[in-house]
Length: 240
Image (cartoon, rainbow, N blue to C red; front, side, top):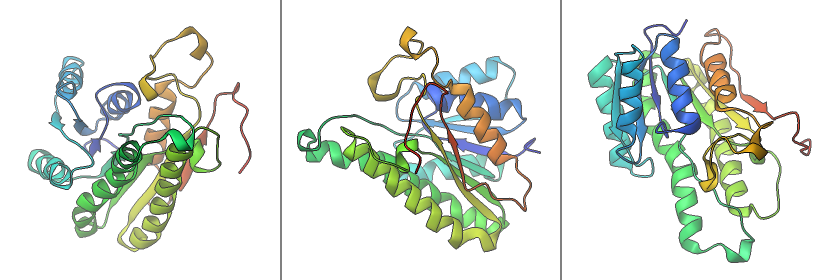
């Protein structure tokens, strides 16, 4: 169902975003992979080495409107359309509220919330014109409940949930679907951690999240999957 369609994946230099790119390429999609550093070129090169030739890399700061516009423009120039946007880029830290600096708060919201807004804003005119498209944001389970030492991060994810829910209602008349994937604990590089640590053995794997993206993106056109929440069996969490 996704074969020959075109996807943009942000935060695709490593971890969840990189695995999402791999899984979408395996479905036959053409890809624009985006990351904030030159490391994103490695993702594109690795995909090409696997035999996926329809891939471009665009270094992009998702908090910068012009750079996000450039990402979408280059994707359309290369492939003629955008069918799926995966807003995966995100950052996080966990500390007491009074220890969070204004600069940290601003940066968190610029990437986690503004980046999602700018990505959607950039692709929507194109998707509306084609009366088709899917916008998927990798959010977090803490967009549904609160945790101590996570006030800033949790606030950003609540904002993402609110934005995505409202946007879904605005654009459904154009055949555009908007949904979020909200993982619990994932074995990845998040919050300056390392992937593959022994204590993360029973956590979710990056491919679990990537498979959820494929599922959401490949749903029949008449069906909207608003939200997917995924937790490892070992994680105890509040029911929202």
